[in-house]
Image 1 (tube, rainbow, N blue to C red):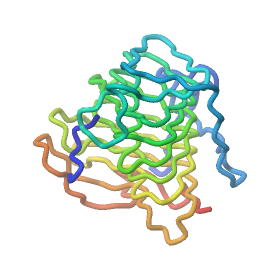
Image 2: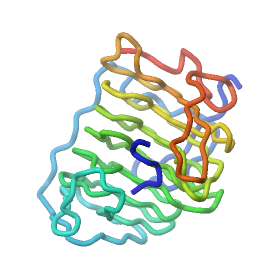
Image 3: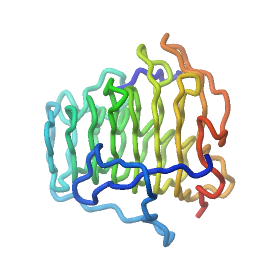
Image 4: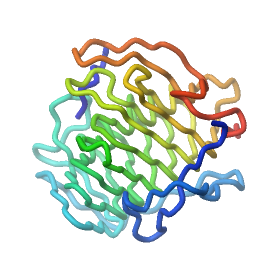
Length: 272
């Protein structure tokens, strides 16, 4: 679910300690870059789901929920795969929760909602519905960590950043999408948001890797981004907007690195 209407300096320290087995928001530490997972050139293969689990009512998660790579898909009230703004999520994560080893199939409803700091580890969306995940915490110290996993077929956004704090996306892959991450352009309550995208594989078609609101002090840092199938470089790595809290369509104001809002250089992107 999202409030964003449908018509609607040089290298800084990035991230260090995301544990490969138990990643938490608190483990996002400035210091070092993670080694590129796809440096050899090929996009890592998707996992095979280990059974199906229909979900008729939103699953609430506190602590850690290990889906054991089962495929979770909506049914009944969650049996929608459209773009309705009123859909409920398959999972709701409370502050500090971890969701791992999950495949979200079709219908995906509104994916995952994080109500505070959360970790999504090895979570895969086979066909994104409204959004894959929405981050809704209100604390400026909230950290949302997406580590591993991937998403396909997002007609608009993959990750919708409505709340406050920092979002870190690492070792992720996405194909066929509108935006990988969008800082909400017209939520009723707006915040300064920090976004870090590092060591990811992005496969065209897509419109923009990240969209941010320059007027609210958002920043987006891109590192080790591998772009596949975009020889003409039509995909915008970072797009700046003037956001608002009135519900109006936000105005796009520019694209490309500017050293302030969009923080990356040509060397941070590679085309395959």
